[in-house]
Amino acid sequence: MFPAHKTIFVSALICIFLIILVVSGALLYTSNQNTIPQTKTSEPITPGLAVTVPGDIYRDGKVSPQDIMIIKQHLGCKKTDPCWTKVIGKTHDGDNPFYGSDLDVNGDGKIDEADIPTLTK
Image (tube, rainbow, N blue to C red; front, side):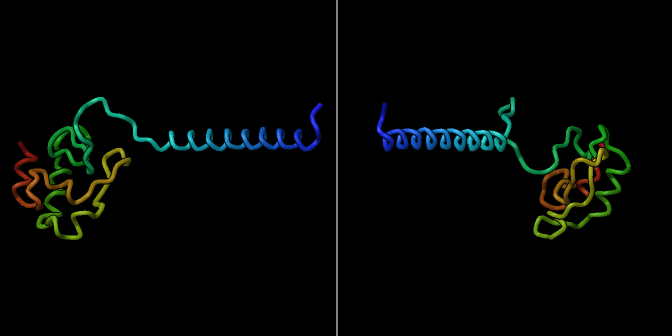
C-alpha cells in the first residue's frame, strides 16, 4: 500500500476538497436567495407606490373620498420637505406603506390643489 505520510496527505486533500465543495455550495445557495426576481415587462422598476388607478392612494381599486382626504391633509408638502419621504400610511391591505411623494399624483414635485382634481377625474 501507500506509505503513511502519503495516505495522510491524500486524506487531507480529500477533506480540503470536500470543505471547499460544501462552502462553495452554501455560498451559491445564499447568493441565489438574494437575487431580484426578473420582471416580464421591459418597464424599469421605480421606487414608490405602484398605483394601478391614478389617484388610488390606498390601492383599493378606486379613487375614494379617503384618497382625496389624505391628499388634502398633506397639501403644501414639497419634494425638498421631510414630509416627502415620510411614511404617511399604509394601503388598504396594510402590506405596503405610502409616502408623501406618492400623493403627488400629477408628478410636479409638490402636493397641491392640482393633485385633487386629478383624483376626481
